Amino acid sequence: MIVVFTDFGPAGPYVGQMRAVLAREAPDVPVVELMADAPSFAPRASAYLLAALAPDFPPDAVFLAVVDPGVGGARPPVVAEAGGQRFVGPGNGLFEIVLRRAQPARQWEIGWRPERLTASFHGRDLFAPVAARLATGRPVAHAEAVPPRFPDWPDDLAEIVYVDPYGNCMTGVRAATLPATARLNGLARAATFSAVPKGEAFWYENANGLAEIAINRGSAAARLGLKIGEAVKVD
Image (cartoon, rainbow, N blue to C red):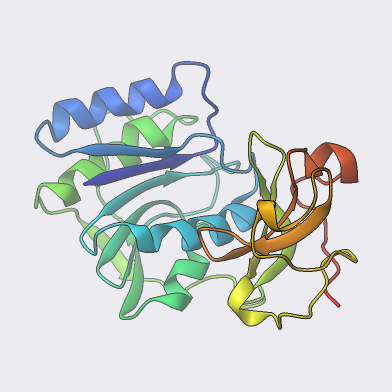
């Protein structure tokens, strides 16, 4: 399958235009729209989110992942392979964490170019057709392998990386790395929403393994003033 992960947002033509390319180039391959609201202009935050979500998909899945504020600039277009899954998108760190957490792992620069390549929409013009080619077993020319480019990024990111429609705030920290007694922004851990009274703030291990700050039947983002990119204090 092809899995689409972008910061394009649910409105506008962009996801639909990429889907049209996939339908033309890989009509028999199922497409899963994982998310269109990855952190905008934030490949680092998106990298930790993508790494938490990818393990739910088959080992031969192809991820079409585009969080690309530097589109048309110096960042290389890349294919990353980690644990059998392949990831197509910009070489701006978006695949740094998946490359660390799954083996074998490698990354290389895409050498193939389409006849039409606009400066501002590589998602449609380059990454979508490359993802379709990989998913259908067609070759994609590539340049020399390139290593992960952001070794200074932490293995777990103590920041808010996503705010869901309920106002729950996911961090880039894997809950399994934290002791049960840890406090996030002064909040104690709970097993789930129903374990605390209505309106109480807490943190818990969400279904993707990330530490998440939440309020039972309320918005943690609104009540606590949390937003993507904000540091989280871990005690």
